[in-house]
Image (cartoon, rainbow, N blue to C red; front, side, top):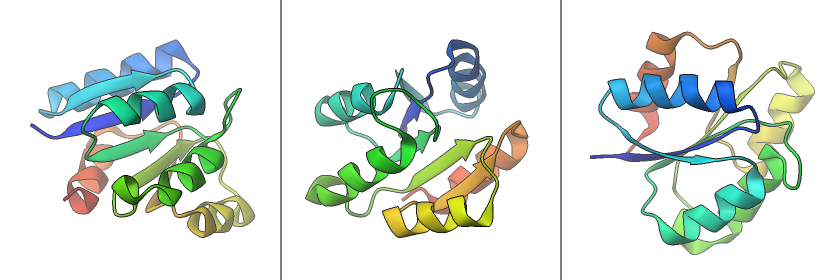
Length: 120
């Protein structure tokens, strides 16, 4: 079973994402912010990271850069799921190493489709 690290400081968003992903047959590890995600990534086998951008402690782009610096996560798909939709923010995401960018509110079917496209 593929494992996804779902990172969002909103408990309700984490629940919606987790419900969608477990329903599609994924194992979900939840994290409340980028720092929590980094800590959990060290202790779990993660096939994909789905992260919010705007979070306390460590934001989504900071988490993406930190993961990309570690050899274990060099090729792990990282999707940013956020309310941010500006081209500048998307370019910053790509520069940080994000695999893709999805804008909230998300369509569950589209989310699963994108994940299945990029997960290894």
